Length: 149
Length: 325
Image (cartoon, rainbow over all chains, first blue to last red; front, side):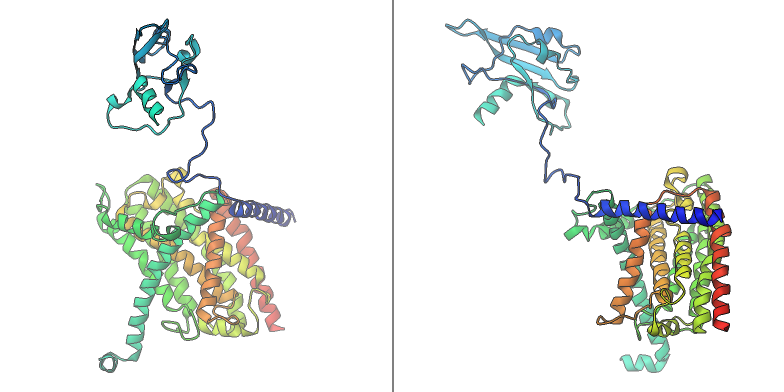
């Protein structure tokens, strides 16, 4: 008798399992077909850092070349921050900002410590290359490129 | 030209040769399409799309996969038992081909109507165990051997309920020819005429015979690294793969003939009905695979010896008694 009860119970559980997969079969697809479709990137996504434009002078960055980020970077990924004082201006203007993205761990210390709030995370995730040198980003050049676009 | 050939070798030989060529084409196309179907079904059950890049709806994907397998180097691992290792993938393909000869796809669409048709299918499909054992033994690999031994135990256990569930139908038709069995069902399919339990038993045993989930212990990927075909690659692996999918087709086709009225059905031509019924059963087997977890080995054997075989015997005795009354 117990065997029959067990068989019936087992059959019911098998059928309910098949109902679950049937529902899943007719449910809409949840995957995204990547190269053809992309998902929206969340606002807190951490890509490589980028320089933010100054509101008063949108053609230039907010960076004041203090070197805080360079000193704070735990991996030493920020290689070179240089700038010059332009005629008739109080603040320095950055001319070179080199980030070695190969060692960067997106910890965000540079973004946090920046006194001028000049750094932010970009949403750039499509980065591949065969050469290490391609990941030495000059953020000033990139900023200029973005400005043109 | 054709008349001369027929005069020389005889009508029957020409028919068999043409039929064999047709069966070969059917086997290959069917196996390719079933891999596509399996991937589509598994994809949608897991809420993915499945293949979609190669051709419309990914329909050419299996051909691309086949070409890849054809182009691969044929590797022979060292220390294998060479004759057995070479023979196994060839041997697994012969029973599969022979079974198709006696299956009636339509009233006239049958290579040869043998009066012991179902015996041919059963006899030859039990031969595929032999080639699995050869593959496992010849590979000289512990996983292959374990997989092969499991397969043998499983096939012996499930061949009995498979046979016993077919017997009541043969009692009712008094014939072993598949065509006669279909023709008797013009008055009603056997699944509705008393033999529903036989159909259930046959289907469960059939799933186990083809080594499909939840009875896929011989090729359990997670514990045996693909079991008996671990050491096979390239075209040899493709032959095992082809045979597996064709076996699913045969099991479903025999179930269609015995319980679902074969090619009988209104409006549409017979072979269309036959393929609709067969592929529905195939889809159910695939549905099983993506739903159920694998059983343990003792559960597998207990289920056959303690439940399926007694149930099949009871069904047989009851059917025999009722027919005698």
